[in-house]
Length: 288
Image 1 (cartoon, one colour):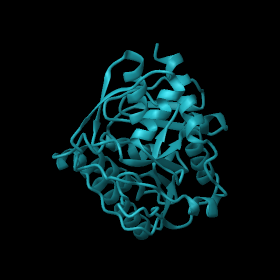
Image 2 (cartoon, helix red, strand yellow):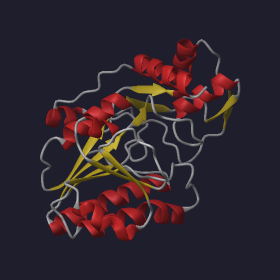
Image 3 (cartoon, one colour):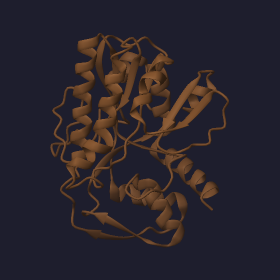
């Protein structure tokens, strides 16, 4: 939102809690009232849907929480958008919870999705509802499936983001609990690169229908490799214990960003070690 505002765009930022943005181009609204959606959409040329209240672990065993906290607000938004279908939609889905393979293959947009978690199931359900809205009402939507996004601005928060969780534990000398043996492989995407892609999408006319697009580095890194890189960058030891793997976690997710390059000329440019250094610098200067 701040990147859009810095580019001269007027932004209506609706969230569940008040956020003190430092830009006169951002109208910040703290509200969960779904009946207001239509009035905000009427003033907008595009809706960027980034809201989510869950993680794969937080709704494990509680499918109804996924319905109430994520799907219901999304469906209310789509219903409101029926009144102005010419308003485009950018929806941030999930790559890490939809794809998964033990075969070593890199996931493309055409790969089979097989979510293990209710969180992932909710994301793919939302994608199908968005596609149905676009077909019925002649709408245009871009569905972005990001890998694990990290970097400056990502606060330490229980269940959200392994990198800030590690930095917090290291800075306090606390022990991190690792689910599994640390061999789980993920694809990490720097926030600056991700923002660049989103801005490219928003700066171009969207095609009618729902377009699915991966946003990823295309590089797989195991948790144990990530831990070693963080220790090298911070000069601190990450104390950790290994516990049984969770059924909601896919062993390996690496995602192909080729389509984004083809459509928008986009490829991530920030190597993991540089991104981790940037994240550590931000964390170290803002969290103390």
